[in-house]
Length: 293
Image (tube, rainbow, N blue to C red; front, side, top):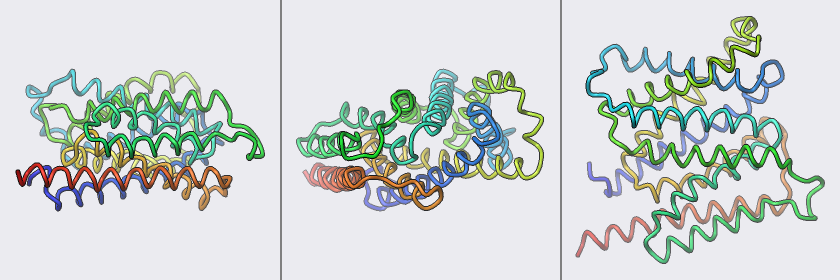
């Protein structure tokens, strides 16, 4: 199927929407686990259980190990580990929607780097305005935690690496790439998590069921869907479409955690969504014009 075909683009959009809903719903579940476990433990076990699930589903034992391009896999795995750990650290200090919005600076930077049309810059500018509106100024009841913002922006940098690394040939299928990358990320985080001394309670009920649900919703399902989307989208389209994620996160935080945003922050999310939709439409039209020439 052609990368630029409307059917391929629609499939990619559906994959991304399902992945976003899954990830942001899991963010609410992660905040519940933070009450009993350190952040890095939650992050490491999310990747660990996710890798085990993917290994079973996609029959990891059939991987052609000689074909693996480990440079691409390791960079992808490091990006996954950093994105997970830093984002969860930011969630301890920021509302879910705000944390994701600052994290979005990463994919926004990727979109800006690959922008070639004047309309690309317009939509990216809209997304930037939306991010600026997220700052509390004088309208909010309290300011945002500075360290939480730093964690979220750092997670965004890892997110940018994740987008770029996910498009590089890995020598194996996309599903096996996700499994291998998740395993690499888990190996980076697990030694740190083991030092927390909280593993004895992980396998107790109901914690074990929460961790398995988190692994499915936050890792196994969305990363597999995003890998499928990455194969159907350019880095520009993927990076800008991910701007929908702050809105999904805000609604998830509102529904599951009772987190309320100020009017300017809701306006910011609406602006970011507009940028995402605008980029998708104009990019598709530009491709169709180029193909007709």
